[in-house]
Image 1 (spheres, rainbow, N blue to C red):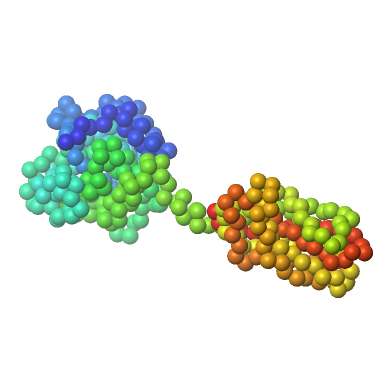
Image 2: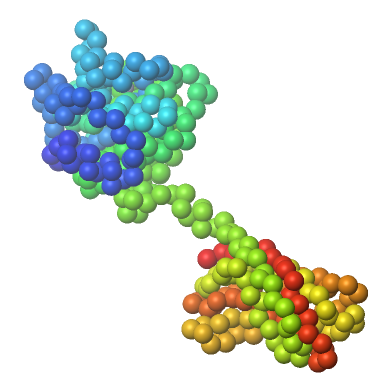
Length: 336
Ligand SMILES: [Zn+2]
């Protein structure tokens, strides 16, 4: 038992669910068949395909035909993922539907049985309807953008009414008259709606995947002249390297001049928390070469503690001379 949403409630629910490309067709708020039959209580959200594709479909959905006057749905979703608001109220989208199919959505059952032949239920009274642009031809895929919005639209209705994803049904699940409407894996669609309903309305499923992708840190080494030997020296960078908590992997490349050939050099990653040294990584040994000395300070799998700042240090074991930190660059990937 649910009172149909008002146009204002529907717009608000769509925006909360992250539907950004919305076309309000002029007059959609009062476009209905309420003068021809009852509207509500609503119990389900139906999905359809248009069985045709092209630019005139939003208009067709709005006005219908002499034989089947509009609105022919509540919303029309094109292949680009644009959602047209077509009507609010009773719409000519479902026609009559089977009792067993209706009972399934009414009770939020996971199983949606093959519809009986008899159709005693007024589907246009009890179900919202989303029309989606698709030819219905075998193998004609929905675009990812279109599918994403279809899931959001159905989730927005279920969320508003407190329904589970089991209240989403296909036209073909409601009547034998429309056996391929739409050619969509409804189990997968309902699972996607259920996943949305398990999260806040502003959830974006791709965010979780993005978190698994590493971020890149590539600050440059700032040159410093006349650096002393015999003490640990910070490698100054043009920007932050990594701030914890994070795992990281990468290399800071250094070019030094004035280091005597054969002079030992050690490098290490260190962490600083609130300005104080909180961790010294293991030192790695290098050696000065003829001409400039090129060093790769590598850590294949480090972890930076929470609120700690990662940096690199080196020490040249040569008390007699000063050297120059000429250049360098970090090439570090990290995962927050
Ligand atoms: Zn249909």
